Image 1 (cartoon, rainbow, N blue to C red):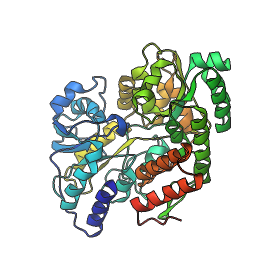
Image 2: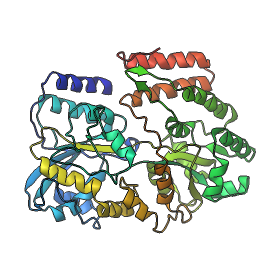
Image 3: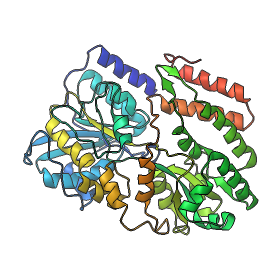
Image 4: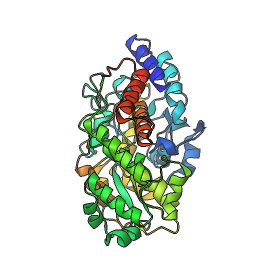
Length: 457
């Protein structure tokens, strides 16, 4: 469905049917689409202020000028509530910019956005893109180039992952984010001490330094009646960043040899009971945070904040973060300014306030626990007190190290459906329903059906 929606958008752009338009509602992004199921809702800046963090106070000076008294109504559409948290502080700096903010469920987002752009009516000044489809929007020509006049965005302090995803194939910066999402292995310290004889992150990381090493540890965990992983699907998030190639290059499906090897890895996990044999977000998966049945989750920043930290009650203080076999990133939300917005100056004032202002982002991170896009903010946060859930460990120290290793960015506009097809094929092979060869054939057939324009060999 999303593919068809975006195809309509692309046709509209290429045929020149887009005309200037501005919407009366807008929406905001989510750290993880899986955790955002908000109903479509409008709120004005007064309502948003009641929900915002009081510590966010400073704003980035507009490239257009330094007039803090500029008057405008801007609209924002997003699939999550996070951006609302910036509005109170922004309105203290820009009291005459009124923000109409609309949350649109992620699964409905493109269906709502596409006809608005195609008709040039009710298009929001700012709208967001989740990692699963942001590359479509980046290359569709619907967002302004933030690296050129009149924006001239200075992104020297922004992590490369954010700008790489937000830059189109011609080199124009179309979108930024206030967050980035490095991943780690989130493990039980008490189980590590009992089974491995060590519990500190540096020591555990050394033992988990390769995928083969993790299998060795998994065998030891099994002897103690403990599952190594919550789900092999978690491990896939890390494995995807190890690839040299994304799923699609020059309109052709590319199956990196690592992904074929991973199929055997998953079969080993399944045959030996090294995971819970559930999918992410299943009740058993979440319950494993507390019940002591699992040694580790392999998840990015949103996984720690919204899975481990939110569910760890009796297990609080027993968790730790460490690096795995390879650095990885997964997820995120980007935002850009509609190319025909009549309110570009005010839109930029807000976008730059929440993505390029170090003081704002530091306060936001402290208040909400998100890892932000500015290196300097994250470096300063690496010196603050650590997390109670992690026995005092500072998450920024770990995340900064992961990001400094420049994890591979392999996001394409095709990933959501291709990843789903891959998981289905891997599951069929692991459960013995198909041979490996047949499972790969099924995967390629599913990709070809989903994207008939791609070359699949």
